[in-house]
Image (cartoon, rainbow, N blue to C red; front, top):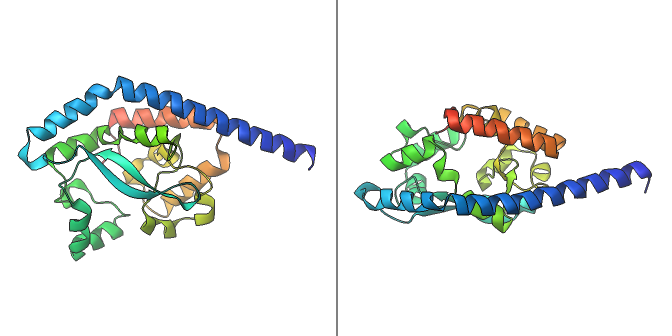
Length: 215
């Protein structure tokens, strides 16, 4: 192996070690610091009859090397929302046509509390559990459902862990659909490094607090 390849591999593994260490430390801090939010969201759901049900919603997503995992969110929809989506052919067709997502005004499954949780991105907080477990990283391409894989260079996408924050969210979140979304995520994979990750975290925080592109 020549010297340049050895240096490249060394940098790659150093980056992965730094990234995983940061993921563990930050997810632990976040889960402890934001623990009151879990209680607050539970109380909000408990006292709203239309929102009552499990606190967390777990959906199967595709991770590193194609491994399936359950991604956690605060539940923002009625119970059995996925089943209701697939049974409603017109709604499911709209879901596919709108880049595997529905706008709140088009989605009868979203609760009133759920609309608030989505707009503020509070619904994403439980993903720190996924980060701590190692299913996800703080920064990376957004984890996709199996149907979305056809939009990507699958072999390339599955070489990295999906992330809670990514270049797609930093670029516009739900305002950006396929195929542009896939191109953005591939661009991250090509240029991933510590400084790029820090920039993406900052830009995601700006988007979260501004509420732009969230639904």
